[in-house]
Amino acid sequence: MHVTDARDVRRVSVLKATGLIEAAIDPAYDTAQGSYRLAQAALVVCITDEGHAEIERLRGREGSGASPKKASKSKLEPLDYLRAIERSAFPLRVEDRQEIGCVEALKQAGFVDAVISPALAWKDAGGEPQELAVIKRITPFGRAQLARGATR
Image: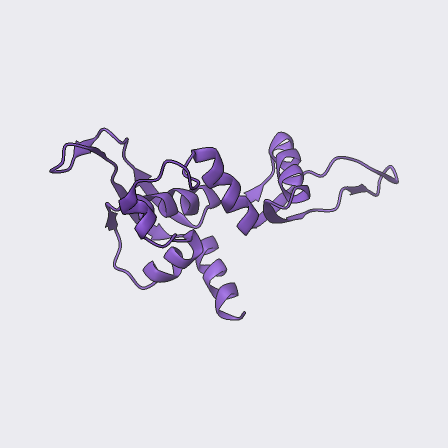
């Protein structure tokens, strides 16, 4: 994701400094005046494992309070999910809560174009509120991430 707003560039630099994302921040050298000034652009490459863990912690989905059904499933990582849907036919309808969490993270990272419905949009047979996500496509940024992963 390319960022050019000054406030967003500052946010990117903080997230990069804390190890939550990988990013390239354009040099901020002003040759006309010979001094450094604030960077005006940044390219967010990906969210790190620490960043994903922080997202899960902030969502309150970390460990505690998980239902037995969720605890029995292995944790699905967003980038693994991206690899799993790489050759899918789009639009792709997603109803599984864990997969929707991945879709949300991938959407925030700019790897997919998706629409996520509110949790109360429809209910399953058990009467629990359900979410629905529809992935329209994997973005060029997402495809680049997949290509980087294939070379590792």
